[in-house]
Length: 231
Ligand SMILES: Nc1ncnc2c1ncn2[C@@H]1O[C@H](COP(=O)(O)OP(=O)(O)OP(=O)(O)O)[C@@H](O)[C@H]1O
Ligand SMILES: O=P(O)(O)OC[C@H]1O[C@H](OP(=O)(O)OP(=O)(O)O)[C@H](O)[C@@H]1O
Image 1 (cartoon, rainbow, N blue to C red):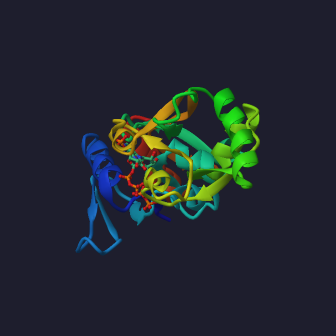
Image 2: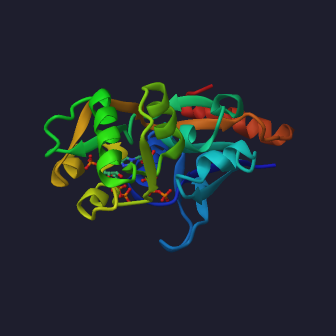
């Protein structure tokens, strides 16, 4: 039985993951064209590369359909309740660093903290007859964070991309999204609340606790982890 390794299928996470494995003597690559999601592995026996959306990797690991997977800690925490019981974090990989934050328009000069947001949210509802909208794709993490911080009078609006644009487009008043350099927030005239950091994330190698392996698979897993120096 081969060890199934799930890696993001595109963009910076895929490229950096290939580099990270390459630096440890394991060559990962695409088989065929850019649109083909089969992978190649060289330098270690018995390992199969599966290219997947970064957002699907947590669930594939939890279901035991892949044995190892690379994705952001933000996506694992968002997609899996009780993630720790289902996945084991093997190593942080030192790239894909990003912060999940709550941001509001720069023009809201009186709003700098979550308490201010809470106050504005109540006033907003009274004035407009609907709740202040926060656009995000991180529903679980944002709801938990706002509940813990006593902010209740809001509605989440689902946004699967270009989230910072929702304020200008008037489909939300605030956003909860990933920021790295801060360029996207600045370009969209948004500021992070002083206590608005929900979590810090980076690309991480995870192992599925549930995925079964036979003797040959266990030997391949041990050899791979030795090579990656995470055993
Ligand atoms: N600007 C950024 N800099 C560094 N890491 C980032 C940045 N934006 C997102 N990430 C991280 O990259 C990972 C993948 O992000 P995202 O879900 O946006 O990927 P995607 O390319 O849209 O993937 P999918 O195929 O799932 O749609 C997440 O863990 C996220 O934290
Ligand atoms: O702080 P910055 O360095 O500007 O990076 C942050 C941006 O990067 C990500 O978007 P991505 O490019 O992955 O596109 P998306 O909108 O489809 O998520 C994230 O959603 C932010 O929009």
